[in-house]
Length: 176
Ligand SMILES: [Zn+2]
Image (cartoon, rainbow, N blue to C red):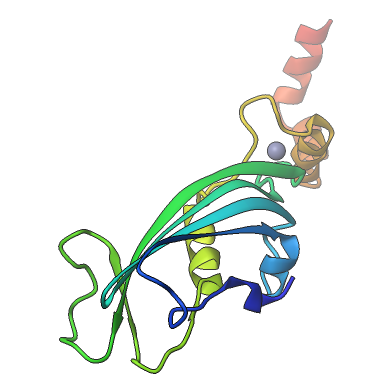
């Protein structure tokens, strides 16, 4: 996959709507040096609307990405369903015009931009849509790994210390 696959030819657009479709896989995220996303299968649909000087892009991203579970480290598939609403504006303008009245993200381009690269938008929106804490639903984690982690973090020497404690004899008493 080439990042150039996501270029939208602004200059070549005719008035009205043009729809672009892409698929995104793990190589896309690897090309950004992302090591958290182990696998990805996303469908991208970009509806580009040109009306005179206005260019609006509705970019819908849907599918799954696979990350590592924070708890058991097994692969964890996360659903992705996010939409970027962009307004492309050309030439200068007032500084603080990030959000126009329609609530769309305004992206400023110089007037001689012949194309717009959607790749960074796709990458940012998908990454930001992922939850901060990522783990399997209750009971879905790899039990073997959890067991290992439980025993692995027991404090060395705790066993002997327990035997030498005054309560050790009590324990023997109750065990009998
Ligand atoms: Zn897990």
